[in-house]
Amino acid sequence: RALATEARDAGIHITFGPVADVNTNPKNPIIATRAYSETPARAAELTAAYVQAAEAAGLFTAAKHFPGHGDTHQDSHDSLPSVPRSHVELAACELVPFQAAIDAGCSLVMTAHVAFPAIDTSGVPATLSSVLLKDLLRNEMGFRGVVCSDSLLMAGVRDRFENEEEMA
Image (cartoon, rainbow, N blue to C red):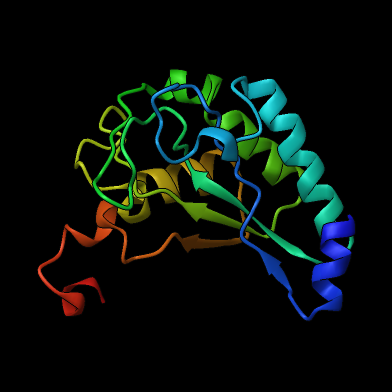
């Protein structure tokens, strides 16, 4: 709440947090200590607390990196990581804190430049996947807020295109 109050007093209206990823891969080079926990329940508890406090103080929150970047061993700044988990496995782990963030009233969800081939066989990162964003996030999980992308200059999405015009 203090962070949110200070941000609002400084004219900041949105925080690109919390990191709702569950840090399940000890070789993860990018999430690691940015995640609240290695367990879904604890990550969900702390994610929800952050969202509730910040939103109550008038600061929009963005739960990231949907649907989860914690089980990767690559950095999406440099490559396109892939998480081979099934829908059932994802629902039991990675999606738990995101559902907690949604239930707590987060305003935004930020997408991950991570592929989930067992769920979307096209091989595209979640950022570009209607299966993950429309079917899963909107229809199944009930999120009605703003969906935003992580940086489009990250290799996890950028390398799918020849040039910037193709990204538009």
